[in-house]
Image (cartoon, rainbow, N blue to C red; front, side, top):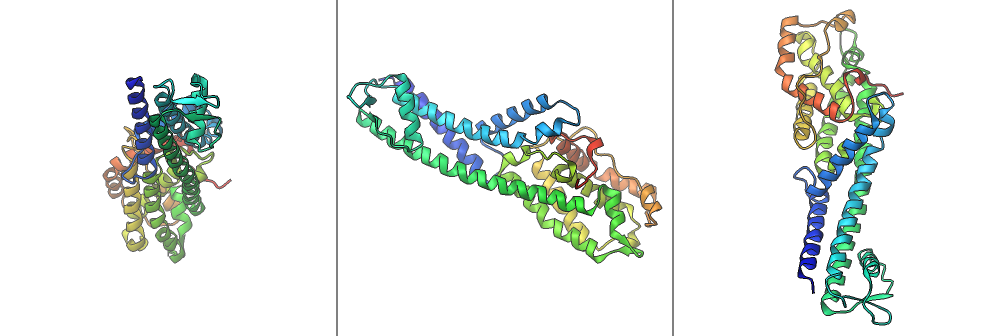
Length: 338
């Protein structure tokens, strides 16, 4: 009996199970060590293959699906390899239908149909230890398949929610100034505009929690800015910067709608900072006040607005880092629903 083969096999199985549990069941944030390395490696490779042209988004939009499938494949491969090492430790661990010890390929086959609970029966465990190992393989395979399928379905739902938020923001306007200008009517901000801002608050909070629950969500790239959460949230942040620091204080919308949304947006970015994004050295360029003036929207003094912009520099560096990590650059940040 090869004790080393059993120990290594059990260790590999244990690592896979812990990784699956951390990725699918933990809400503490981030993914398991295996999932994190597989996801980041596949995302890095996809971005290198996509290049820097405008067509890169056509390839990047498949990155999330590839990462998700790659993660599940790594779990299956790890579980399969671990139990194969266990069943290879003893010559009589697996027997064919004539009672002869199975060869290496047959043990590999036996491990596979045990994990996937097929119960073919043309090979059987030959010792008490291998019978117990077979039971363990079936249980861990059932655990992986059940959690894996559930996880896949939940991720699809989370991706839909993520793109719905982007679409909601894009419907308000194509850029920060456009959002503010469309909300201005008859010398004040319309009640429907503030109602839209209010409805976005719980959506942003939910998006942050979704990223913690499903780390792979970060790698689902949209093929247009109007469907990209990172680009849309960055544009929304620019609009909030204008509403909170650029518009004349006497004409600003209800703080009860703007401030909760601003705090929710900051909370979302802080949630992503570290596990998913790295803050850039330079912040996203702040929108100017001249376009608001052309739209006859009263604005504050330039110096006061400059102080407001400088006060959120760290936050907007994180936004720049989020967009960069999602494959978007400054020139892309204009939302359209086309």
